[in-house]
Length: 311
Image (tube, rainbow, N blue to C red):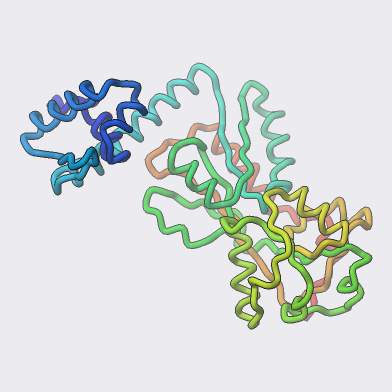
């Protein structure tokens, strides 16, 4: 077995310097003095036998050799973080899950069942737009992320499909004029304010693409941008606009008559998938959560039976 000649600590310091493009910033992140950071870089360059970076006006520029080594140092740093997390989980089991806002209500039952099965495991759940979830999975802040299906072409991620097409329903207050229409096409939404999630919401992007394909000017349609399901629903209930939701997110409000599902001729559907890092071995508890998530989407939402598709 060959013993590595490069010092791991030197590589980690180099990774921070290359990432921050500044020795000063790297020193602050690492809680080291600038001379200590410089020492690590010089030591790494001596071991590598080549110049790795240049400093001009306090800004760091990587040499071609430095660019190549940076990719390796990035992976080494990530693996060290993963190893630390794994060791910590051996002492105290935990699972960090990110759930896209679109599916926040859908997974409440899965989370509850998981806690019943594993009461000793700390389950941390983050609700955020899909692209924020992906960032946190890539940085290992989350073990897995449940997101809206898009073309996430990142080689560091592995995709696990849960559902190919979850139907989005258009809802309004029963007192809204549009709720009196029997059949609604997307082009009929012109003049009705839309309440949608933030620009980083994958669901919003899908909806906007669909509306634009019908010739609608989407910039004039959005009335309110919200960052939570609850806030958006309350605005729709108050008659401030209309919105699209997964059926499971509005079941209660529809059954109680606070929201009405509008009969949309052209369905809008979104897929559901779980994203994990390819270089991480998921613990058994993570695979159990994935099984529960798959069961969630294999069972139809109760209120679907109340909404007959229009042909």
